[in-house]
Image 1 (cartoon, rainbow, N blue to C red):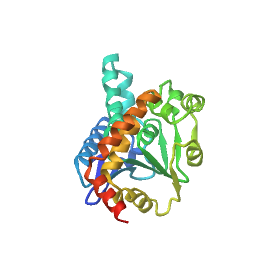
Image 2 (cartoon, rainbow, N blue to C red):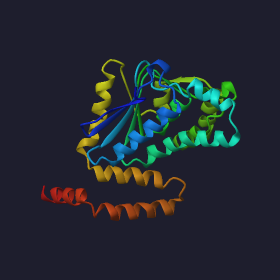
Image 3 (cartoon, rainbow, N blue to C red):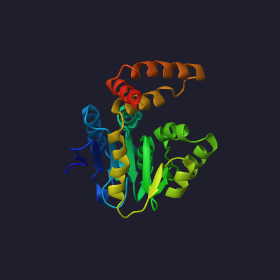
Image 4 (tube, rainbow, N blue to C red):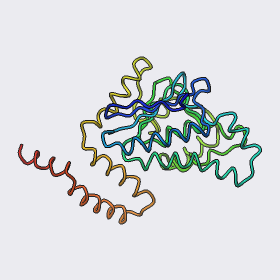
Length: 251
């Protein structure tokens, strides 16, 4: 059975974490399959947006028990290599050209919360729950820290990462970690409708905007503006921009 189900055939690619009996907990196989699915969607010129969601009652509960057991007996070098697999997934989400949207229902905890936060956009049911409980078992939400700190201020990031509590979807939206909330009923349809907005936009413009947004991380103001100059010039050379300008000038 596949750990990741792929629904293709439209501008929206839906990737479903398919370990409902394990609350879609992350293990080596799921991480590998999700990375492969993201790369395949990235290479498909017809795909305008990617949705990541979970089968069953939860989005993702974090690391699988077997993965935690493996960590306990591994060497430092083995643990570095193991941690790097999840880090590569988080990095890949930003490198994929299309917007990646996390559709969260139920719980998104620990690495599952990190996976959602690593996505470009997050939408959730009103009953969804988020949290980083790693500190409760003496663990560090390590890669997640790099993502969360780019989304929140220092004080609030510290609180979420070190106190280990769950927080509501309403709290996540208030903090800016969730873009939109919807009711549980019909959530799957709403998710696709939300993502479908990208089907009517310029694919090249959206992709270049995503690239620019993440490229300017860590640059000072002048360098970030210069990156914008370069992106502005590049986009003028695209077919989408030229066609769009022609239509605009004709109105």
